[in-house]
Structures are given as structure tokens and as C-alpha cells.
Image (cartoon, rainbow, N blue to C red):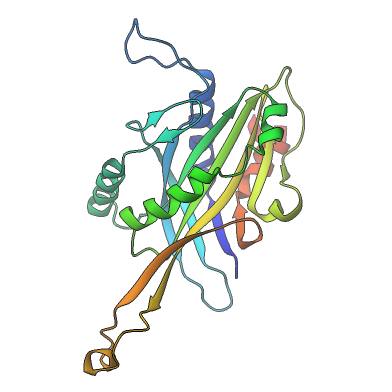
Length: 245
């Protein structure tokens, strides 16, 4: 059964503006420092994890997004600090215990649409597919699932008018394409999942019968039809001008 990733209305502008800022705004370490644009950015999703029950799929509901300002950013990669993420997880756990770390987001900046299409830029890179399980294991080893969003962005030569649509083909359930003035963005969702297996060499003794069972853990990434990304407000906000006034 696919996992449902739900992005609440007030989280969407946090995601989009962080990707847009990293892409369009010059970044300097200090006043006379070198200026950089078209950078990747990285952030965290916070909310609720609801398990499978009564025929409903597992759901990851994002209600807050935060940006990792300590992440090292480049035009082709972004490197967050695991210790920073763990610190924020503990901080939320202390003061907002009702919210869990349920996932991540990061951007893929591109010069133009041709480059996006040639590279299938809305998809996770090989490095992303390796990173997500590692992060899952280090920061949230007991979470059954985490959501991960890739936000690809590029500039348009003129203001676009295309309405938001779902990705095509097998990616239909997992993402969207939207136009926002002179920029185009793609949002695609993934999940990483925890699997626990009983070691075949585990002896069936009193501890085993009492439920004290050692298991082997692994973390895998799911995509495309195994992920249902829902951003309820997206189509309304970007389709209907009346809602933007």
C-alpha cells in the first residue's frame, strides 16, 4: 500500500520561497565576499506520522518546514549537518513534543527548462537515494517512514500561464509541476522506510519466546506509484487568481 504524503497549506510557501531564494538571490559570507546564486537548499519537515489502519494508507502530514542554514550549499549539491538536524529534533521534542521530524526537502536548481528535461531534474539523484536511508538511520532510526521532497526550479524567459498539473506517467501520484510568474517548479515526493527482520541465526530460547528478539534493520527508498503526494492548496492557489487577491 502506498504512503500518503500530505503538505499543509501554510507549509507550501516555506518550501517554495526557500528554493526560490537559493536560486535567485545572491548569497555572500560577508559584504565583500563572493556572490553565489542558483544554489541548492535543504530543510526539514515536521508534523505527524499516522500508521496504516482501517484500510487507510500510512500518512505523513507536514505542518511546519524549517531551513538548515548550517548546510553547505553548492550549485550541484547540498550537504546538511547531521548533528544540526539531531539538535533540532531534540529541541522540537522538548518544546513541541506533538510534532515529529517526518522528512526532508531540498532543491535542484537549473539554468533552463531544457536542462531540467535533459537531466530529469525533478527526480532524486543517486546521491539523494543513498543519503536518505543514511539520514533516516542516523537521525530517526525508530521512525517507520520519512518523506523526502525534491523541488526542481528554473527560470522562464517570460511570465508563464500554465496551470499546475501532476507529473506524467508512473510519476503521476508522486509530484506536481507548477508555474509561478517567471519560474517553473517541480515537486516530487519519495519516502524512506524502516524494515526489521529477525536474524535467522537467533536461537529460539526463553528470551525469544518472551519477545526479546534481536532484529536486523535496513532502510530503503520508495518512489513513483508507491508515494501519493498531496498538496491540497496547490492547485487552488496557482490555478485560481481570485484566491491570490
